[in-house]
Amino acid sequence: MNAWRRTVALVRKDLLLEWRGRETITTMGGLALLVVLLLGLVLGGEAARAPAILWVALLLAATLGVSRWTQAEVEQQALETLLLYPGSREHLYWGTWAALTLLLMTLLGLLLAALGLLFNIDLWARLPLLLGAGFLGIAGLCAVGTLFAALLVHVRGRELLMPLLLLPVALPVLLGSVRLTEAILSGAPGGGLWLGVLAVFDILFLLVAPVLYAVVMEEA
Amino acid sequence: MTPTVAIALAYGVTAAALLLYLQRLRRRLQRVEADLQAQRRSAGPVGTVTPP
Amino acid sequence: MRLLPTLLGGAAAVLLAAGLYAGLVASPPDAFQGDYVRIMYVHVPSAFAAYLAVGTVFVTSILYLWRGRALYDHVAHSATELATLFTALALAGGMIWGKPVWGTWWAWDARLVTTAMLFLIFAAALLVRELAEDRQRGARLAAVVGIIGALDVPLIHYSVVWFRTLHQAPSITRGEIKMAPPMVAALLVNLLAFTLVYLYLLLQRVRLERLEAARSAAAEP
Image (tube, rainbow over all chains, first blue to last red; front, top):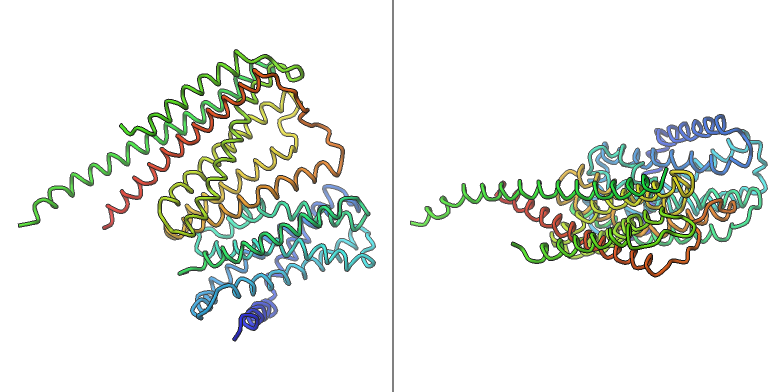
């Protein structure tokens, strides 16, 4: 099997497991919706607040999802089996990355629908742009998230450490995505700049994280 | 805050933190040096006795 | 008596004394900030030492993952600890300066937020090392976190700068201050002094790390 087909097989495996139980997406969706409701309630439901609320909710839910993914790998010992296969570990990284990205894109879709309803925003016309901008943010978030998920497999208290690691590192993603979403929704200036920030973050960590992933997985 | 208070606070916090860190470092160094010496002492005679 | 640490420690102590004199006595008060500018002579050097530590972590972490020599990990671990120490000091100094000059302890200034994020990331790197299943794995995982954290520094910094400034006119900025030569001198002496303090602490911390490794190696042959 070549690397591409291995990666696709891994994504299929991950998504199939998720599809059977739908545990991760349910808990993530629940938490994200709760954060949206709470922040909307305490901050007030003006449409201008929606982008910030959306991305804080998504980021918090992502830490839950990423560490849940690690937990599942440990419990089912899927990782150990996968590591027995010869060949490079890089497709493992890309498989997990793609699966996580798809999972978070699903969550983004759900959240956008919720936001459109709760904050009375007309999203339909701008949906492709919003999803595109969201993908840029989520791709970078998953680039480091996938690495940290693997990193924390052999660390005690991994669910507790995940937000501590992921949230500060992903700060540029949060800021960039919030401003980019604002730019799309209200035509605020600076969209190009934030596109650049997200692109740099994505490229940097999608190049570096797979290399470090191999280091983390060595003699695991 | 008067300038004197603010300056005293800033310099005091910095100095205290650095000194505390240094002191902790010193103490840990002393302890590990003592441990190593004890290990050497307990291992030393055995090493010299074994060759016939 | 080991020569290098003694010399370094002595030089650091002398320069610190000189820096204290230059900062508190010899330099004039600033035209705008008055005497509060003297806080800068410990705050800026602390931040500088913090960035030195972050740079050290970055370089030695890469070297450790690449070459695998224990010494690189000792330096990386020590520098991570010093990075948390000096970021905490830079934060404290910045806040103490901010309260009288800005009128608030915390001003959502890009440098303060970046420093706080650095503190959290490097504290997390220490936690990862502490909680890893075994020592060697802890060293490697901490190196990975250190590299990611160091690479993230410019991204975090610029994204916070742009996030604040493009949205609203910055209400409070650190004014461009024309510094008088004695003030520049005071700052430079203190920068040099803190660099030496950092190097001295690093050297001692690495020595501790090596001795502790020797102790645990001897305990379980």
